[in-house]
Length: 178
Image 1: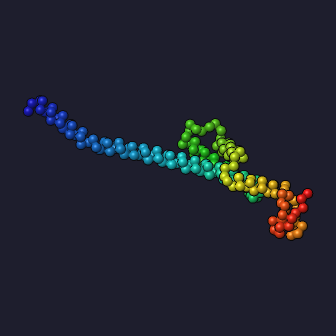
Image 2 (image 1 turned 90 degrees about the horizontal axis):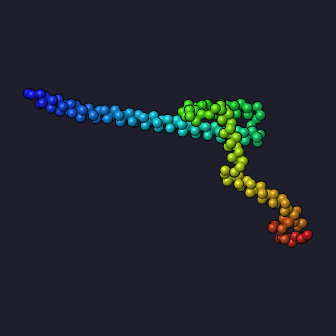
Image 3 (image 1 turned 135 degrees about the horizontal axis):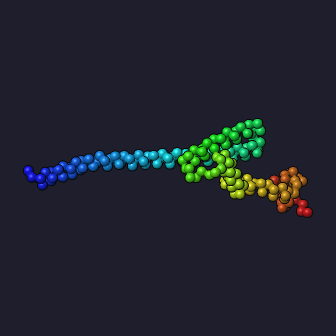
C-alpha cells in the first residue's frame, strides 16, 4: 500500500466518524435549545404570575381603603390589614426587580406601591369603569328630579303626585293646577 491510499482510507474513516457522531452533537444542541426555551418560559411564567399578584394586591389595597372610608372595617383593624397588604405588595415588587433589574427605580418598593394605589384611585375618580357606577348616578339623578318636581299628594287617595301631573296615577282624580 502506498501513502496515497492510506491517506484516502484515513480521510474516509474520518468522514464516516464525523457522519456517525453528528446526530449526537445535534441532539445535544437541540436539548440545549429546549432547555433554554423552558428556562425562558419559566421566567415568563414567573414574571406573569408576579404581575398578576401585584395587580391583585393593588386591587385589595384599593378595596380596603374604600371599605375603610365607608366604615365597614373597624378603625383598629385597618392599619394592620393595610400594613400586611403593603408588605406583600412590596415583596412582589422586590421579586419583580430581581427579574428585571433595569426597570427597578430609585424609590423603595413601598413608595412605588403607594404611588400605584394613588394612580389607580385617581383613574377611578376620573372615569367610572363599570356600568354599576353609571346606573347609580342615573338613579341618583332620577331621585333628585323626583324630589325637585314633587307637588305633594292627591287630595282624594293620598298618592304622591308630581307637579307635572294633571291626574292622579292611582285614582284618576283631577289635580288642581296652580
